[in-house]
Length: 528
Image: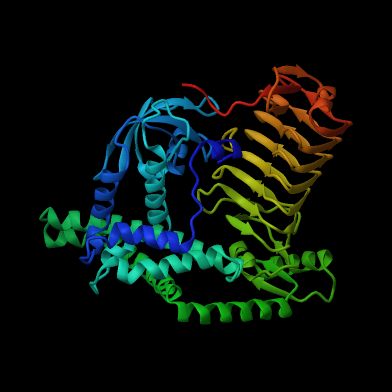
């Protein structure tokens, strides 16, 4: 959500104590135990009593799944009006009033309430929208951070709030604070997401097996190849899911969590003392492995302490600040939050490719770190952006290719306020936007090629942009697109940018562009 959007909706930053009080009001007000099976009903009753049933306006944050189905970038927001609320299903039937970026979407939709953010400005001044926004915020926080789908299989009995509310709330705020190592926080997030997907797969397989048995098939049909395959897949899912749930359950216990954190810190220190570089080698012949190690030797000092891992994901999990990750040819799956200063270098004549392991919003999200990426190809066909650079982060991208081989979609690099990026000798191809420079960012692009994109470089006012020896070719809408907070639309050449950006451009060439430079007044939404 952009700053402009955040200003127009209600945002709540609540303390742990305030959250605990609110959830007790919802789940403990009756005095009777609230069983797992009753949790959704309790929320339904509360919302029916306290939120407006119709007529209010909101921003709808379209889910990743729907964005993928509509083939639009995630995240995306739509301005809607709520026509009715289904309190039993916790959904709303909405009418689309305005859309972002001229996207095409059906005019009326049924959407989950947790995806709606009521706006401060409303057509009907008599609606109590702030109250509505507050209860939807509670609902969203609960189901995003406290509720786990596997809670429904709790066989020990007891009421949900007594067993889970305080431990999970404590865990959330500890993860959001500074007492828990950032790397451990990321690990817990990944474990929870993996567990959710495995649990969904388990339910799907159980449904298929149940359907087979309920249809009254003969015994020989039950052990058919299809049924055996479903059963074997279910066994595999159980074997993967069980240790994840055990780990998450232990982390919810404050005493166990304290021991876990102590062990994690000690393990990170051991890694820091035992290695400076990590070689990612999946498989191959002895000669190929020797060739890889020889190439690693030319890239590092002879006395570098090095360890070997079998996947790029394991490489990042093993790395500590200051390490270099050396990756061999082939395609490596990854979605990584990088909060340690790390170098990633492709080794060998055949450049390694990094693509999304999951349909996430990024391949790399760099936070509070200095990162160098060299000699790799980033394939962003499954993600919204290849590289997101946040505040207090510096990234150097050298001799890399960022591409979407499937369609002209996604952003190659997104640099947010406070982020700094040097791009040297890189190629961008087949993207919606190659480089997106938000206000307050610092970007230098040298000796690079941008082609076959919708927009080559997207820049906002107050960003610092330096372009040296860059070629832009076959960009559908514009080689450089500048979004102004105000002003009329203009089209021109590099000189036009001087009035709006701190920009230095030399030896930059435009070829076969619909427009060279386009300046346009910023508009988040257009009429549907």
